[in-house]
Length: 479
Figure (cartoon, rainbow, N blue to C red):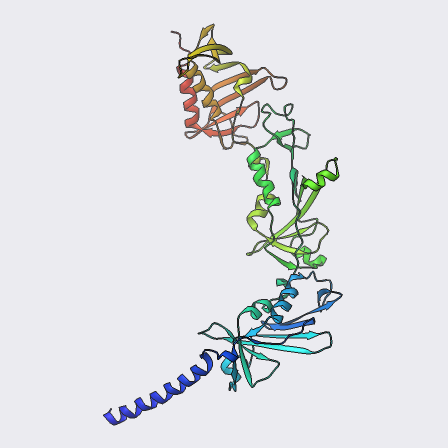
């Protein structure tokens, strides 16, 4: 290419760049002083709001100071949504006005992303069409009342307020302010699990610190782990809706989502409602227990369908939350500890190994020690004896600690028991559960079986049992 042709091309490029610069200055130039803060008039008291967004047109109407969805006044509209919309419209201000803007397509206004029409009580309509975003100022181009001779530049508040679908505006049902939880039941088509809180549990379980129990069909009560039950009830008391998928589902829709009463998982939480100081001053009587009922349905990729009792509003909730409720069982809630005895209540402990039974007597004695200041201090300490001979306290308590450390790693079901490794009979000075038994059996190379008080065999780590039997080996040796 010769030098002359290059020069012509460069000149053409400069012309194009110059034209682009003029356009850029027109579109992106800083507003003049008189152009700043141009208010766009909107109804002082709008009676109708209509907008088209994402291919759908929605409208809200106001009557007697209350807004409703124009196509269905049963729709549970969140009143804060139209209040926010009218607030944004009343304060809408353009930072700049572009006179004689040219082609609307250059601003995305030939096919606006959002069109809003606000109508006042007299029927006067105000329209706002939102186009593209300006890459420099991050503002949006707006056409006001269809006047194509001007394009306004506004912030994102209008788009944020009106870029909503129907279910973005739903007023979801509120959940109670749960107080003290006293019970929880989960009912499935194949059965149910019911747990309840018992304040005075001394007659139900040997460990009176246990307060949560599972009721069996025969009426017997099985003690549960407090932490596990608390975590389970928190799945209900901390429940949140992810979204509402239907505000008035019919029977067919409920069935499709697994939310018919005959097929859904029914969760019932019993609780004593919280009371404020004002409530306590007004009434000396205890508040009546309340029940909260939740139905769980099918799973989706986004969550699990759920609804409240006597409601046709359908929601999605977290699937992990739903699973923790519908798959709960005694196995998932029972304590991991095999034998959590309060040794202060024990009179004696019988230990049988290899057919030989030895008895450790539990007592107390006073012992004098010298404090840091030189004073003599008398304190009560445990006294353990065997065949009338005082035993080493540290050795005995190592055995007791080894018993306490036995923790279930699983349930053995109906597996056959192997060789009996050791058995213990615990005699307590108490009104209930005066005699407890613990039996340890061989199982496999990694586990042993523990049977406490004749219950279901449970797997325990073999190393924990080895620690216990090692303590036994050196404990009953005649000096």
